[in-house]
Length: 259
Image (tube, rainbow, N blue to C red; front, side):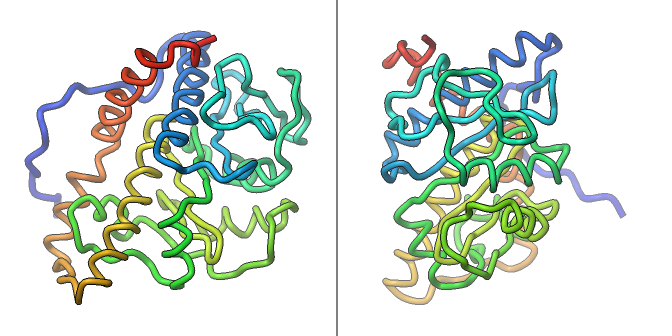
């Protein structure tokens, strides 16, 4: 039986990708650099930790990533590195974070549908990860992850080897996000905008549930309510539109991001 129609916001339909390889590569790099600036604004930076990646549209076994030890707030399009399937820098002049390759390469390899992966060590994401639980559908935005996220319930220190990355990718499966126990959050998307917006949303969902549970016992949505909210707030097109608003703000206020 087909799902009943669901009311949606009247927003622009934004494409997952552009027709031209060159145009799509430029868009992914632009959005990737912008996402780092956004993460810095939201306080998602933590020293040298954290990475976002975007699959190259021409060479699907390669992906763009931030250089090692450059603060998120300073990253420009020209700083981004292109890594091949062996972790070798094939475009760019800096080195990369070994953990970035160990985690991201395996997800890009396992999920052909994934264009971008976001992972950072955030305050509320890490606090929630210590509870060893999935998020509950207690607010409508949290439902973007209703039955669409997993718990990676093992911890072996820094992820420096691909073996652990393979296990993370396997546990992620077809889902949108993962909570890495004692570590933080990870989100994926069919565009950079989606992956970045899901990460922002998930960090906030962790914060909201921590606040709600500190104040009392939050009401958990019924399956019917959560399913409805998931279909609305889990819209990939809505995520792309939300990211676009933030992208326009960054480009206007920090135009050097495009250098």
